[in-house]
Image (cartoon, rainbow, N blue to C red; front, side, top):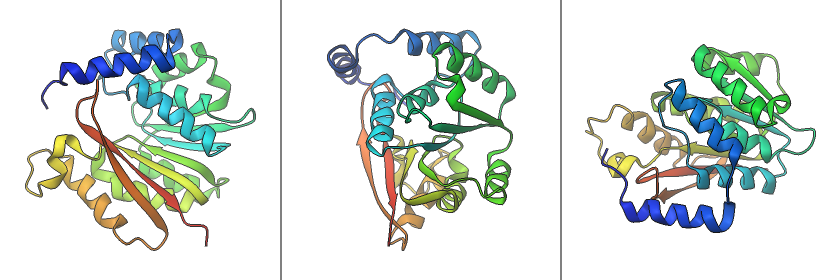
Length: 225
């Protein structure tokens, strides 16, 4: 993918300076991730605040995250929880999970967060088997090839009225191309196809530009009837 347009990043900086301000915990998280050699694919600062506000607006007490990486988005989501709330986040790589644990603890959010290490589909199956209390919000930012399967599990684990959020669903417009050489496109397109006229979900997607280039989020709400 091409670099972000400088003006997009400048606008992101303007938004951060005026609406968010300095955040030493998130800065330290990104620095720790870089030092540990994690890929720089976290959500942006503005997107992290969006996730926090959506969790607060939904009065989320139980959040599921698929794809922890170094814990940047987990810190944001945990901040949006109620005082007794809990975040369960799934990570494939043990080394990434260890970095995330340190970052969450350093940000003062560690007690709210359980990190489950292993293959996400197997972990999700286990959560269903355990009849885990339903989640109020599910955030998915993991391997796009399994997005459709993650949607299936999210529906099994979410309560009526829950908010489901999927990241990276535009991919600089490559989602339009069924023959794209981007291996992540087919899974993303399958997610859209599954949601088209879905009987249990109302959904939309929104394009984003900024420090993370041109991409987007897909959001769906589980119907309550």
